[in-house]
Amino acid sequence: MLQSLRERGSWGPLHSPPGLADDATWASFQTGVSPARHGRYFFHAIEPGSYRTPFWEEKHLQYPTFWDALSDAGKRVAVIDVPKSPLSRNINGVHVTDWRVHGRDRETQSWPDNISVELLSRFGEDGTDCLSQNPWLCDARALAEENYDAFISALAKSADDKLIYAQELLLQGGWDMFLVVFKEAHCISHKFWHLLDTSNPAYSSAFALRYGNAIKDIFTGLDRAIGILLETAGPDSNVIVFSDLGMGSNYTGNFLFDEILRRLEFNRLSRVQRAIRQSRELALAISHRLRGKNHEIDLRRIRLLYPLPNGEQCGAIRFNLAGREPDGMVSAGADCDALRDYLVDAFLELVDPDSGAPLVDAVLSSADIYPGPHSDRLPDLFVMWNRNRPISGAASKLIGEIRRPVPSIRSGGHIANGLYCFAGPAAVRQAQAVPASIMDLAPTTAALLGQPMPELDGNPLPARYSGVTIQSKIEESA
Image (tube, rainbow, N blue to C red; front, side):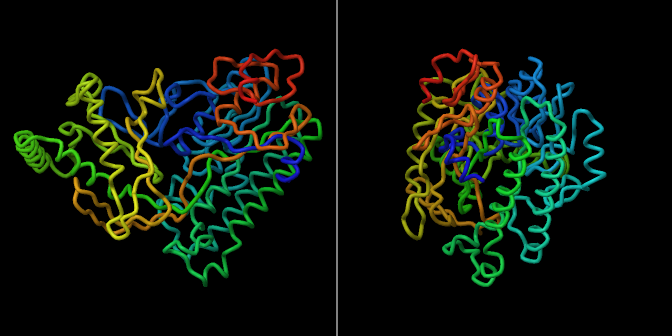
């Protein structure tokens, strides 16, 4: 089905926000704006004016979804399981969240609210990603071999459940926009990627012989599901099929990251500053011991910089910035710029202690790539690991050598950029791939429905927008 869509429409790579993974990418899809406007970077949130990184809540999203805007304009919409999206209440249509998604933010919810109750009663809980059980099968750890069969079976059931409900809902008719997301390709790639990569340390020829087609089988099933939904929708429907990100072997240096930062920062301090730091750390340790185990030692308050929780694809750094953080120690301007330059150079000097190969591909500055009203809700630096080979240690003149046991994590990890296919009566057939941004899909959908949204950061894809005046941004993207 995807091949036929490609042959009769436009297609190409779909660029994702640099340095960020699925949380920020899905937020940019649903809003059509950059992370500096919607404010989401991970399943933790940064609360400006504090050191808190709480679990993501709906209140943290700083920009409305495009389907809310379409609903407000009178369009009838169905939105099923877009990951990382807040529930739209009073939507003109149907919205289901966190039913069969990877990386759930909350329990299953819906509008109208009786739909979620009916779905759980009819199909049961998700077998791979469930907040009520810990661990769940599709978490960040490597999948135990005894769970392979159950995992594959649960994913197949998940896709079947989604298809059954989506087709039933689609058959009700009258939809202006119908949006459904299948998670299964994402999950199977996270857990079984090592069976595609013979150089992966977790590769097993015996398991590859038995389970080597697992990823292909799930993708084939999803291709079939797309075909059924498109046949149900009819030939006059415009369709966009997309993947928000790609996948590759999950090699990361995040388990070394905090120690690397500590050593780099220590080298930045004078002898007097080091003595002061050590005395403050001792005071915090004593306070922790006196207050009991439940009292958290927050060393971030006494550091120039600290790591933020983040996905495996890169390390995320936050500066303890004066005027932004409560106990800020780095002055904005020249001091911050000098610290940033120091870190960029230091990380680019890191090598694998065995092979001498570079550990870092790039260090991205959020200030450069994400200017905007909510940039203070993003990390300050993204350290992009070289993911061509496993990482077990780090070395440089500044930090010496660091080695740690490699954690047992899922074998497939996010990589930048996905893909899209756009077909239907409005699509312009392209012989060559047409690159697009994840932020382009919202304004494209809106323009197809006669509701241009020029205030978004994305550009509508080249298309025949009947009866709608689209500003020059279309020509710029073509």
